[in-house]
Length: 189
Image (cartoon, rainbow, N blue to C red; front, side, top):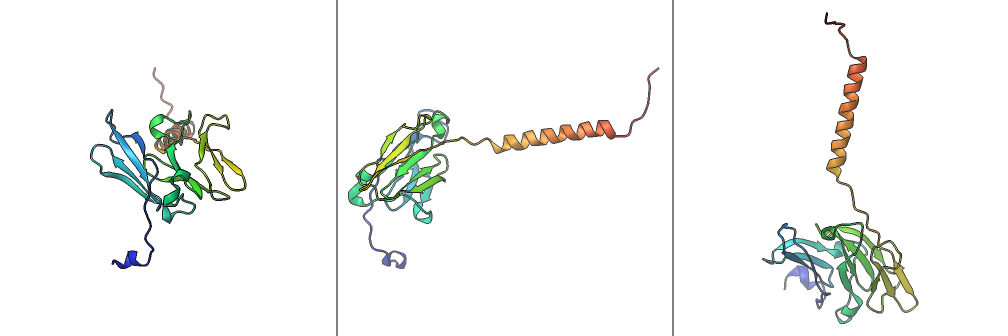
């Protein structure tokens, strides 16, 4: 056996129901599939060819959701419903027995992760309970019910910020040059 795998006990792999998302290729009527495994791996696969768009190794991140093979019913993966974000950019919510994570659908980055105070005993409930138009998560444990509010705030394009800054700087320089620059008093007569 390969030495990398011989030191680790074998894990029975299991997955939650995959999520179908809009394709990154920009073609209409094409979809990709996002698959999450209980060992912390998440993959986005092209719907047409099956090629990997991105991959996330959750075990390298603190508080990444995992679940046991026999308790797939305690895990859920879905798109976050939000009125603040266009449908193609809505993030993915992955909840396991021990924590939840919000993932970028575009590149697989972890946008947020939170550990549960106690191990979940049943499948998390997805509902909009805070009144902000975004999916929230309710988790039940042996000693209580825990609610997690998901907040989605779209970022502003950084290139646009840079261009606006450069425009304002150019205008400021032009005003200063016109105000304090050398003037030639030439008159047309």
